[in-house]
Length: 482
Image 1: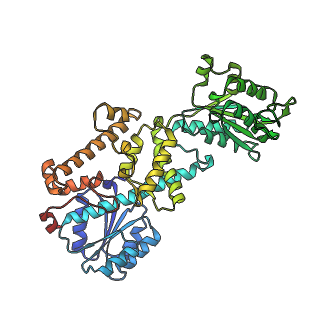
Image 2: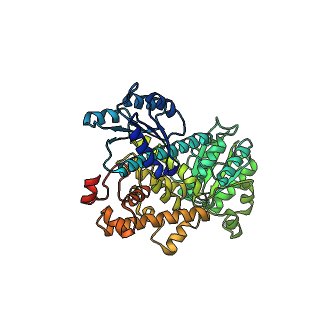
Image 3: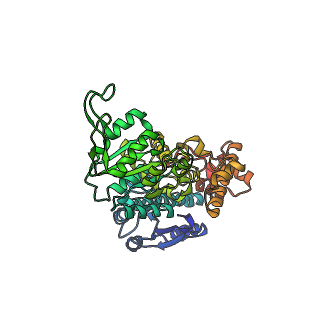
């Protein structure tokens, strides 16, 4: 949510304070609803467009504390700021326990304090809203298990999965490593009439030639050194169900011949055996290499290729669908915070921008690893830019061709917006560093009013921890007026 679109409810029976706060916030571009009666304020707070509420603690008919509790019960997502002329530690603790985001002391010694507190509350509400939307989208995608995406490319994949699931036709899944080929295979199996039968997955590139044949087709006792008993192969184990042959492009020529027989005849012969065994197995194969090209180069049998290539599902690399990154990131965040028992609920806008800009040569698997690492490292409830690997923290990078390349996979408008934000964040960071982390000095160097400069720091999450960590230093003059 852009702070200028935030809607703020202000409730105070002191009409002078009410007018003053209203004017401060309207100057900042907020939509303000000003009410001088607590009972009417409670009714106004039920408006679903209200993002932040500012409440006076002492009011007739209904106290600010009671109003706070009523708002939090009716609309817990609204961020509430309390105002009081009688601030005590006890009052502050009670307000926070009741769900208040912060509180302000009247009279205001610095009007910036009002706008900055509201800006932080509005940003927190916006972050909650973004997280909620992502969670709703994840729930909507639940029918595809962990196969997640909302891009046009992934919608096409989902549609194809639904279409081919009910047949027994062989499926070939093509895509780079880490794009989720096994997830597609599982989605097809568990939507098919075979869903109650076995799903057997084997990585063909992880086994030696001899061991691969034994694993796939089984063997009889004494057929080779170490074969001390008859063993059923994976095709027999998958009888009635589905076998997923991952990285089938790495299967040696001799094994390709035996696979062709299974597809043509529906029967397997164990290593060392004379007789064959009938099997009813749906074959789903996957490869991260272009099998059509491998066929042309003589590295893959042409007849096997055509047997496998009845239906082809092509998975796009993650860098070609950046709009899916936020949804996937939130999915992995939810998964790993539950697995590790840590309350890490959201990803800051700055961190999310870094994730969207990254090229993801390792695809979804790389993104999963990055989110797992961030959940392990963070000590806060938010994943911030500093929790990401150095390569992501620097992107969009330090300028020139590297920065352009990091954005080249995005639409022009989105790339321009992210590049501008990256420049402004780096500019503000550099100013703070040159000024010894002093806000007043940095603002003077930028030729920007100090209050506006502080708002820019807040907007671009520069020089502060998003949950209240170390902030830029204030000058003595700032400290006296704050």
